[in-house]
Length: 325
Image 1 (cartoon, rainbow, N blue to C red):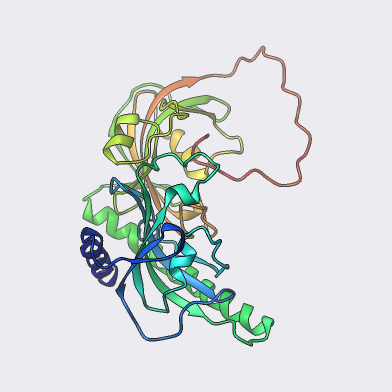
Image 2: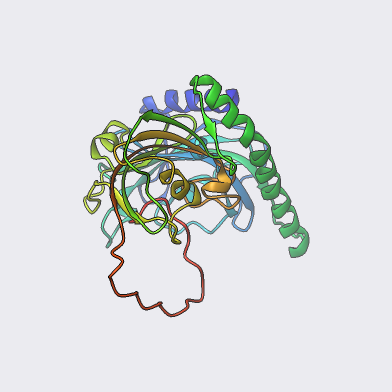
């Protein structure tokens, strides 16, 4: 963690200065903050990086330091449009840099992503690992890559219970722990009956990492407070979902069975009740999550309603999501 904080401090200093940036192709600018010796990354090499993505307004859009998930993949050939990989191609293992990509070049012919205002998308990156492809046999190369990725998952798995215990202690929480490992604190009691599987609930929520960074919320004021990109398509109203059916992460379903209408609570979910050992695009493997929730409403099923017709079987199961988009 101290190494990460040191890197962030160095990157912030570099970002605050307009001097020192070198020009790449198609409007790309880059500044190497820490320069280690070693060969530059080549297309076909395996890379694993920690990163922060920001916009011109200095709002953090994504961060592997917050999600706990390094970005790992085979280095592609730069697209020729000044993309971030063109900047990474100047780096070697251990290097850190600030890379500013021209949004007009990147989004030519396409609408800009939500939250992308200004001239540049800014990447602060640290190259944690490079495995050179060179003339390695493909089986040997792939094996080395997989070994590294597995080592990251093993570290995350071992650290998870320690992180949860520390979060509870640091915040002086007197939690109740269920048989599944769900930790919770009721912050506003309710004398109303609790919902049951089959009921539909409406839930206002704020989802956070253990470091307090908000990654999603149904409350617009909380999104603004957390400096999340405001999605005009998001209604920012309580999430409605039926209990006991596929589509929600298990921890959120279990959580709603523990509170009555009007209650508020904080739930600390181990990864086995959230996104597990795989994670998703935003959340790394073995990442525990915190949800502050309010159970706004409960709708009981109509016993006289006709039974729904079962949909045809699909080729793949639905991915569990904490929120409907």
